[in-house]
Figure 1: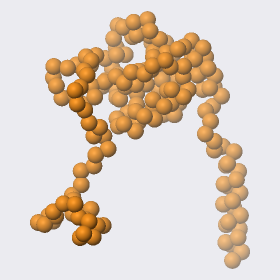
Figure 2: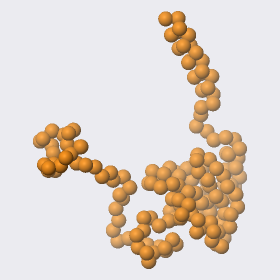
Figure 3: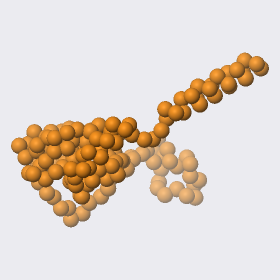
Figure 4: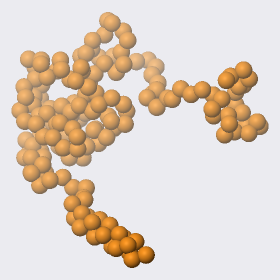
Length: 169
């Protein structure tokens, strides 16, 4: 019994002593770099899913690099594209990553507009990075999960089945 009390006390001391290191703020040096960058704004934010799509822009003669600020697992690249001040940031794939990165961009930097740059899942070989496409119809399929239907039916009683599962194994 005494060992259990000492163990609880030990764990409590460890947790409490480490609480001072747990917070949701950015380091002072990062906040200073952001403030310095914002003094030179406003910027156009260019949000890019991956390096395959970012590479052509970074290597373009139209892009001129200035500084880089890293935080929250993202690299914010400051520069100009055709003399417009921009911040390039790679999101990673998925709508969730794009949303998080765009929100960080808008929350911390002086941004007057955001461009989502990339191929957007293009399967048309006639379209290339930099082409502008305005679809007549579109669908958000990023959160679709394909399932074997019979796995779902075990949670439904027979009166609420929405599809025929006969013959599915």
